[in-house]
Length: 164
Image (tube, rainbow, N blue to C red; front, top):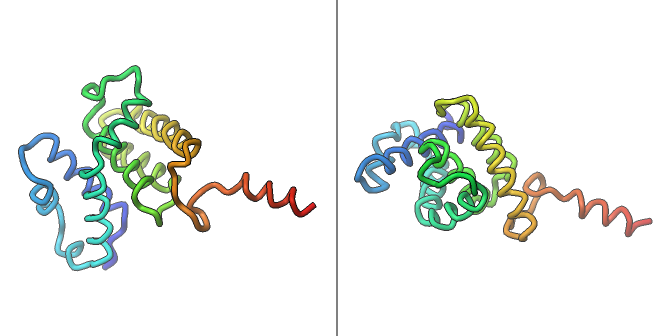
């Protein structure tokens, strides 16, 4: 049976939550969540490990983006689930070159709807990720190319004008 990325993202959120609340290492936080089905799927494990490690290794950078865009909120006041959903989505945007940023944002919103304790969480996650994504695009921080990976509307308009 194929393991879908949404399931893996949900497992990552659960592992990150465990890391926040318990004094365990990353492997211990993740391993108890991984089913045999996931562990037997090399593509699933590759995605899971890459995204999990990207979050853990780059947490300070990711948290700086979050803090910059939540200026009315201290990081400690953001719900643990919401904070980890933001971290996961930003890690995908920054370090998973094959995933369109809008997919990462939409997945984060859907996971927030499922895991967060309030219906406002998905709107909060959406607003923060949208603002961060727009800043990253303006800074040239998004390094994705290929169909659907970045918004090429400006480039298309420029090509159209050049062809006239």
